[in-house]
Length: 238
Image (cartoon, rainbow, N blue to C red; front, side):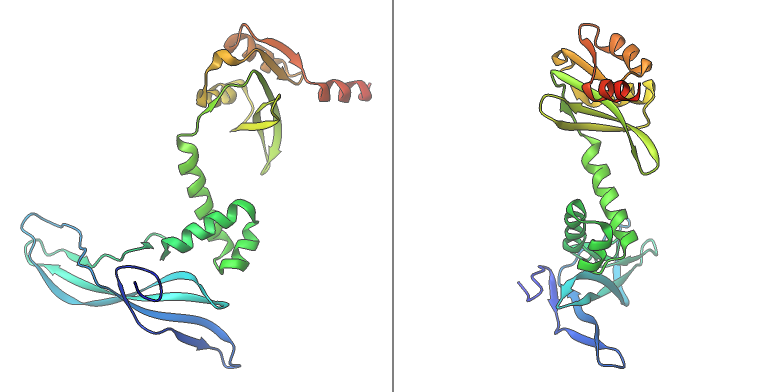
């Protein structure tokens, strides 16, 4: 294990890069993969070395400065198919040119912090933080499922400029799901992620007529009630 705590690398000493006023602006670390990891190009592969290439990958900060790994990758030429191949680099996200541990740290921070805060903490551009978090959220939600509550509540909420349908467990006060759009077709598609539909005994909604029709169609045995908030809101309005 090297001092960077990244297996698979031979690591040099860190270099401090300073501006004209002597302020620390960047830390650079030379790294060389010490494992042979090259993609298969053909069945009759015959590789010969063909120079090297240095690629920069951003890593977790050392001190208060952005840290970059300068990774020297061996380049190969296949004499059989004339393909150009590069030595693999462990522990990096090649799509975003950063280490996996930095990517995971950005995603974890984005769960509880604003993207502007994440940029300040990790030195990663706010746009990149958004991109990484959304990719993570898409993966997590791909197989998301939840059990139907006894009292299912449905309402709309404005988020990022759009009205979205919100599904919740009224008795436990839990948010269960949120769907893009709030039409009958939007909600119907979204409810496909719910399991044990027979658990629903009460359908709680506002006074929107299209929700009532949806409840009668999907949960014919459930009692349909209007929630207290909307009743009081309308009573006060009158």
